[in-house]
Image (cartoon, rainbow, N blue to C red; front, side, top):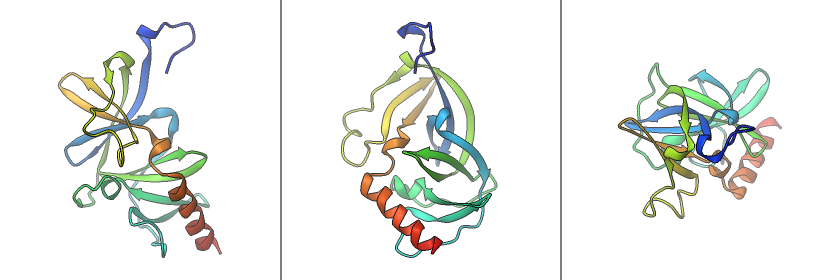
Length: 164
């Protein structure tokens, strides 16, 4: 992401970082609408298995994706640190349940490398790169690819059924 008047060498990414287990992930801050405490979800029949349910956020029904399930991680306990990051995914508002939000980070684009070949490809298309900060590795997510088109359509069907 370039700022007007800056060259390629000074590109800076602004990211919201969060934890899933011992791993650190991030999303572009411009995709984040808000970060809220975890709350009770309403389960929706026939929703994809990684969709935990829906929440009512100021009158808007929002599906919540458990990123642990989405990434095939071991189930974790909900704690006081568990958060829901409300983001925009291809003009659809969704919540991402994460173990905890770490920080807002400014990361020079030249410290980001493409995802290693072993993890890229089917099932991990949503990884846009790996950033290096001090001794930490942060996985950058492309939220636009978190849901396939058919999954977005299925969510729309589920939500329209939930609203009926």
